[in-house]
Every structure is written in C-alpha cells, then in structure tokens.
Image 1 (spheres, rainbow, N blue to C red):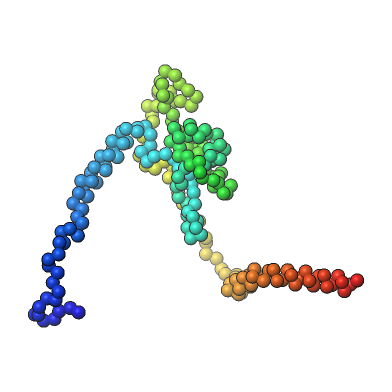
Image 2: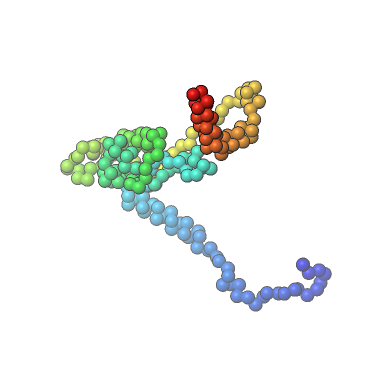
Length: 211
C-alpha cells in the first residue's frame, strides 16, 4: 500500500550495496566500432572470398508449425554434391558448405539444392594457386581483373508466396461440415479393427450358410 499524506516513508532500503547489482553498458559504442573494424580486416584477409561466408542449402524448418518456411541450412549433403558432380573435399575449398550428417528426405529438396549448386558453380571465378601452372577451371589473368568481392549473402534465399485470387464459394463448400467429417474420420480410425473383425465374421457366416 502506498504512503499517504506527509507521513514517514515505509521501509526505506537505502543501505543496500546497489552498485554491485547494477549492470552498465558504457562500452557498447566502442565495441560497435571494434566489431566493424574487425569485419573490415577479415574482408581484406579473405579476399577474394565472399565476406558473408560459403553458400548454404535451402532447408525447411522443423515441426508442423514452421515446416512451410524455408531457411539456410548448415551444409549440402553428400548426395547433392554427388549429383552436382562436385567432390566433397574440393567443395570445401571453393566456398561450398558441406554437412555429411544431413540426409535428403524428399526429391524436391534434393533437386532444388542440386540446381543451386550448379548455378553457384557456373558463376564461380576460380583463382589459380600458381599463376604459372593453370589447372582445369582456373581463369586467366585478364579475366581475374574483372572479379569483385561479394559483400552480401551468397545467393540469398527468397521465399515465394503465391496469393490465391478471390472466388465465389461453391455449394459443396457451403454444405461441407468440417467438424462432423473429423468426428467420422476419427471414429473410423478408432473402430477400424472392430469393423474388420465384424466384416470377416459376416463373410465366414455367409459362406457357411451358403453351403
């Protein structure tokens, strides 16, 4: 209950060591500058590699609540690399993340990530380790001058949302009773064994009666 009038302040806690219980964040602006400088140093160190890191696969979020959304995964599976024609060890050296534990559970995701790998490999510019000894896939010195370092995310994932057009509700949809249909389906699933047993007994009885 709050004090009223000009009375005495109830239970004043003025002798606590409050300085020990307060957390300050005065170093936040300086840390912001330090992180920015560290990103710039890393970008110069790893040039001409992309700043945001390697390319990652398209995966779906777990659970029924979020499985309609897509996001970037940890790495491409071995099956995806095999179908794309890229070696696992070589993939790690050209900016492709690899996850050997990941397994493909659908053909759609497998084909989408294989197509993603092929598109990335077609746009890739490979720098030779030794300019005097060019290997297969390496670019010439004149072509390397046109290469620029990618600052953003490599091949960002775009979510495609198809909005349905408004239409007139049909008579079948108006007469459809969703709750009753769910109750019938649930009852059929629960009584499936009993119904099969009764049907089997009726069939046997009919055969014996016919004899």
